[in-house]
Length: 101
Image 1 (cartoon, one colour):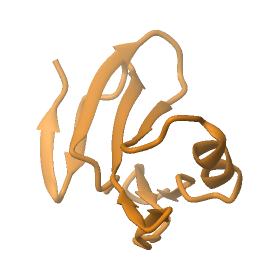
Image 2 (cartoon, helix red, strand yellow):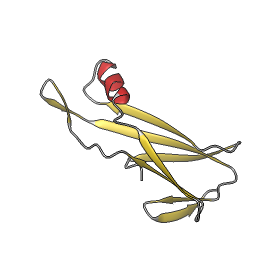
Image 3 (tube, one colour):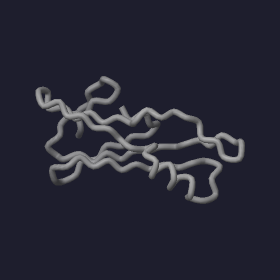
Image 4 (tube, helix red, strand yellow):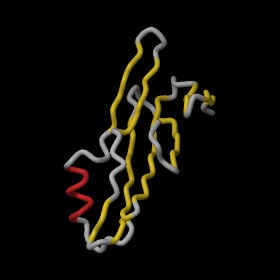
C-alpha cells in the first residue's frame, strides 16, 4: 500500500525488487524543502516479508501532515515505478491480486 495516485509496475532482469520514488511539490521554486523532507524520512518506505506466504509488503510511513510554505499549502505528487524480477508472477495492490504480463 504505497498510497500514491500513480504506480507503474515493470519487469526487470535480476532478483531484486527496486522501487523508484518520484516526488513533486507544487508551489515550490527550489529543491531545498524537498531535500529537507527526504532527509527527514517523509517518503521512506517500510517493508515486511512474510516467509510463510512468500509475500513482500511495501507501505509508506504514515505522515499525512500538511506542508505549509509561507502560509500556503503545498501539494505533494508522488509516483512510484516498481521494478520486479521476471520470476514474480503476481502483484497484490489494495488487496487485489493482479498477474504481471
